[in-house]
Image (cartoon, rainbow, N blue to C red; front, side):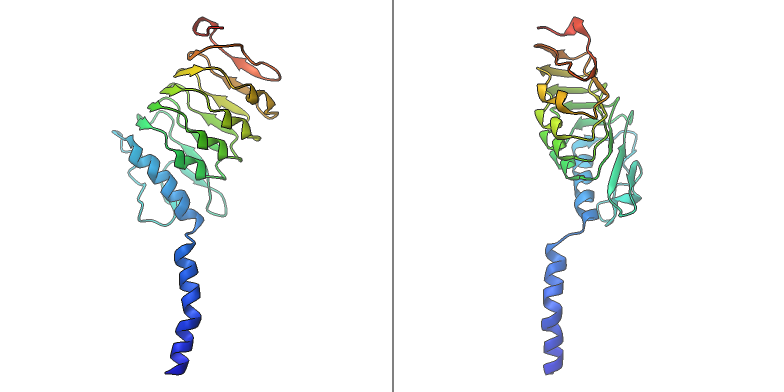
Length: 196
């Protein structure tokens, strides 16, 4: 009996650690499922996004690396409507966030600035509103930032000019105002919809 109790005492810390430390796959699955809950999906492109699976790498439109960490989300032209969720900022190895040509509305979450591995952020041709978050200037690997064809307002954050990797910033066809920061950027702006 004493050896059985000792075994249980040794096993208890391991079980507590397992319960308190969910795997990265679960955290990333939860983040993606938060998006799933925030959008309408008339084409059922997110049908495979089952929150009971421990690994979102098996879901359609999700690509992962060798460590089973989400690196790409391909949902362009998927007929999704709804809003972006701040939980997307938890996908720390995400390199490509492709949500263009949908009917997404509301603000761009500032938490997307946590996606340090992001190379391409394509949110063009949606109905996004609000300002361009200055937090996007923390995306030091970002090469392509396409926000054109939304209803974004306010100024283009000057901090974006500090992104040395940024090759294309397209903010055309929005309702932006102020001066246009151009230092080091290939910038596409529809000056007809831009007031200084």
